[in-house]
Amino acid sequence: MTAQPHAPSYYAASANPAPQRPALKGNISADVCVIGGGYTGCHAALTLAEQGYRVVLLEANRIGWGASGRNGGQLCTGFARGQGSLEKALGKADAARLFQLAEEAKAIVARRIEQHRIACDLTWGYLYGAPKARHLEGLRHELEELEANGYRRARLLDRAGLAPHLASDAYVGGLLDEGAGHLHPLNFALGLAAAAAAAGASLHEASAVTRVTPGAKVRVETAEGSVTADFCVAACNAYLDGLLPQIQSRMMPVATYMTATAPLGENRAKALIPSNVAVGDTNFVLNYFRRSADHRLLFGGGVSYTARMPASLPADMRRTMLRVFPQLADARQDFTWGGNVSITQDRAPHLGRVAPNLYFAQGFSGQGVAITAIAAKVIAEAIKGQAERFDLFARIPHRPFPGGKYLRAPTLALAMTWFRLRDRL
Image 1 (cartoon, rainbow, N blue to C red):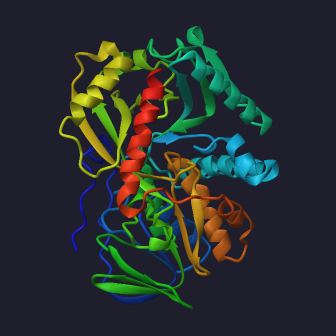
Image 2: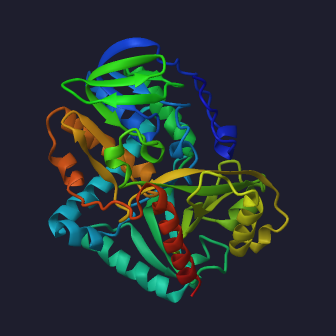
Image 3: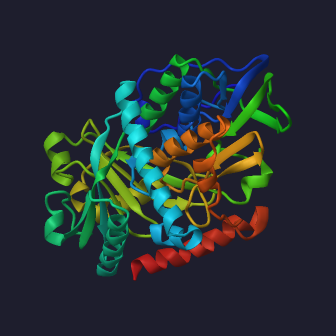
């Protein structure tokens, strides 16, 4: 099998050098087989290899080929599902524990970037922009929830308070989070993979898994080989592709899109976002954007439920970008790309077991840059026999998407149309 190259994105064009990993050939054994070479898989491989496990990682294409190499690069606080909702589902104490695990996730990311010298432009500062006054009230409530969990690194801004951070009239205020940030997502994934390999993990690209057979030992098959392992970690997320039908219905792959301008020059780029924070708005179908290290604007937004990229995508993205930054009317777009992320119905991550020795993690719902780090860590703890923190994640209830295999995407598209209309009111 030949690995598909990375999406033709700004990230791929500015990626750090990385070796091509050999495809799996023949039948081998391992302590742990990890399926998927994105953040979750690379974090898991690194964590387990550091603990002395024999780890084999199988990636269908290239390391970071999926959402981990194409996303907005936002390192966010908490979960896409709000704390209040988690409290209703699990109780206040367990929701508070989950928040602390989300905080630990950001710390793991920062520590690994420093420890392994991963050149991925990690920058601190995140701004949630409120397009309307009612959104600002929602951010006020969110700040109260953060502070109730002991978080003291965020503050509300009115329109005047936005000026040092953002040169746009599209927002009436916002929430500045100094404990969140942004990075180059593909370079982060490549750095994690390099660290895992240095720790002793065997990494294989162009090794799509065709079958997983649970048992006393899990057998994982590819076109040219197999791995027999004591444990398996399925870290496929939006690219599960029916491999484990037991969990497919509780995750929905959705396509999201980004565009990158040509380099704007340092002064012009700084004038757009003077404090170099990442920005995401509070619309349900949100826009998110930030500066790159080489002074471009990276702008993301939109969502669809088909793998087909719209022919009008560059123009669509430009139109949305200019609503936020009309001063970029003369800016050229150098890259426009898309890819799938995985969401759950309630936007909380979905962790669990398909069998006693077959673990999975999926549905990070736009928060995967951070949350994958703690997901991998608690799975590694469970493999080692300490499952308390893993079980906390596994207790989050998840409903299947309505509509079954063929109707769930159209059903969700109809719901999203309603949310788009609500965003405009």
